[in-house]
Image 1 (cartoon, rainbow, N blue to C red):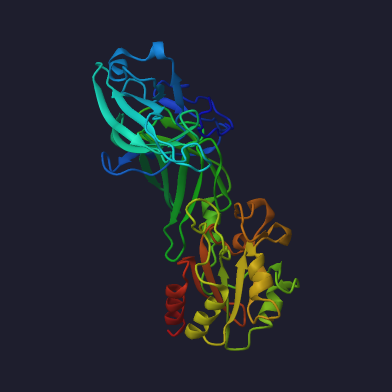
Image 2: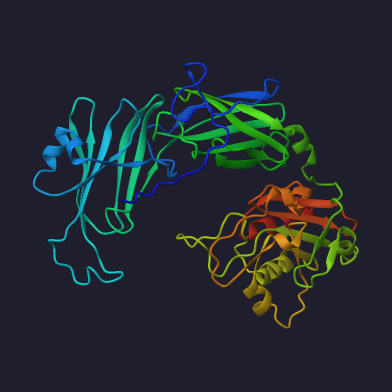
Length: 451
């Protein structure tokens, strides 16, 4: 029997589902004693309302027929069921899934490839006192079932959504859970540091629990930064590296260790109006010629401007079931970006800085064309640009270790950004978190430059 649940490897984990060290702390990993630390108070967001929408790594455990609790067994009498335990926090309710294929109901093409299969399932919540609540009872196809339930946590009641997708029957079930979020922030000298952690699936966070760390600078005009990673992995904000070291057992606070780098240095490195753009060297992905700051400035007539648009080119066939483009992707075709820019800033030189280049754009849209715009490689090493086939499987942003123009310009990853500079190389406009459709940013740019 094959049950799918995500398996994410641990890094340096002192405790997973048990408490380590002090009885009131869940120690995840230990940094050196002289490491700078921040204690962030947490609270449950929207307790009892909505959900965070994060798929948790919650195991679905088969239960032997002779081990099914009597109150559950009574409701399953008369039919042959496969029973699973959807684990919940210790000391609270337990949820059982009982499923079987409804072979007694005639369905055309049941056994053909892609044919409809019908299942009968019961989702039952067993309370500590032996009381049973029926969360779901009925028939469904391989799309499975989806229900919401309330879970008591140390922080309060969390609305939990349970989803069961029957990949190829009761022997192959994909189980995910969406839960609430514990979040909080700490005020530092440079800005606000904010942490968000999903809660509601287990007493202690699992190794693959995704946490989000964000930083909002106090200096006006500077963009926020955010990073998401598994709770036992390193979180990067600019040149600063952080790790979640421990969490209070009741999720009331978390300790963040700053492993390297400096938030102050990151703020100082942010590109601001009036500064000169940094020296760089990269490759034009269309002409394959090396482009530097000086060669780009030589293409900007006096009194005119150059506009760098940082964003991955959209795929003609986006990966994944949602059909959505990944974060940091332009919504407009490059030719439309060029047309819109000409409306708002006539005569400006356009350069698209990307880490993703669809081959269809390169060999269909630009075939026999010498574009006035430049397509520049975001990675310093152009071999790290991802050239998409017509039907890509997936694509990612360049690795930080490769070095990118984004990093050199002090811009956040996975965001569309716009930088405008004059013919002397002085920055006159920056939007580090531009809208992917760009038109609102171009309008704000035009208004700013008219002042």
